Length: 463
Ligand code: SF4
Image (cartoon, rainbow, N blue to C red; front, top):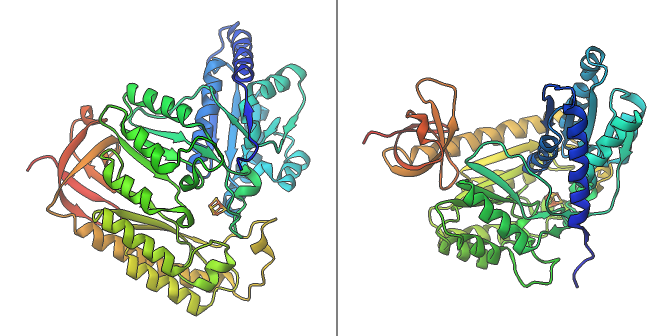
């Protein structure tokens, strides 16, 4: 049974763009210089949201003095940084009294955080949650016209098409295919702040993918909190594997990547599709979070170690060259030595190409926040360091295996360094530094890997 989706009519987005045009007229009337900044914290979904905010700002002519801080709620540390940086904006506002400061994103979707900003950060003029991003121009206009603070934290979970986008760079692009999450992992705040899963319709995703290819983008990452459940809330019979196949059929030389995959919903059909679609990168980011069945249950992850390892084996059967990366939380409440040993042994068994490891961060409002935890931060740090050591060793060993081989990479930018002035990525997403002319940016080329370390490969064009 499809869930109810609040689809924002395209006319409503056109109204927002008309407001952009009004603001443009107003702020450029006296020939002001363009000035705006969007400061982004957190995940790729937030990066993609910031591209929409920049798209709107571009239509407003950038002719206003506005700072937008797009926040993340996943870890306490990021929230503290945001609050520190927002507090520091006092100086900026004193120097430029007309400046508008907006704070948006997941952090302010939490009621206690919105309240905190209202009470303790008078420097902030506008606060809006992820569900209100589509009407950013209208909200900003209210601040400009009425000279009062605006707080917009709606809970209505929306899907909006037609918002203008301003992307960073010309080689790699994010393409959001769905929003929200239904999984309710016990440590995670995302379903509470980003709402339930809402997939964009396949025809809208395909139209955007075609446009990206036409504009020359070579590396397209399909984004969602759990891309593997794409389409379950629609009635069109297209699942995530089908979507990859349809994008793969778009003519052109480009790569399809995606993130994030939940092991609960990763299917054999997906792995088979990845193997059969020549444009789909052989890389999967499959967050395991823990190697202990007891902890996985407490995390409400809906898979166990055996199922996870079985998925990895199936994926590797279809793609022996598959690059596998993961996320791991260390120090989940009541994680014992034994539980942690299970995580270490799982990592040894899978041999991840890279691991993103985090110490558990308590999030107000999630079930894990009330779970008893006898372990200290110092205990957790010991495990974290052990895991990092293992991760670095395995990544270094896996990178060493590339040495002497010729690999196809996409050159994606400059490093700012002299010796290895260009950065590139292999099909599996491994970072390769090389030396060459910057006209190579945006091209697929063959390079010989001559050296490596834990974090990167080093390649040469001469072989
Ligand atoms: S799958 Fe779990 S960890 Fe990922 S966003 Fe959803 S609730 Fe959070």
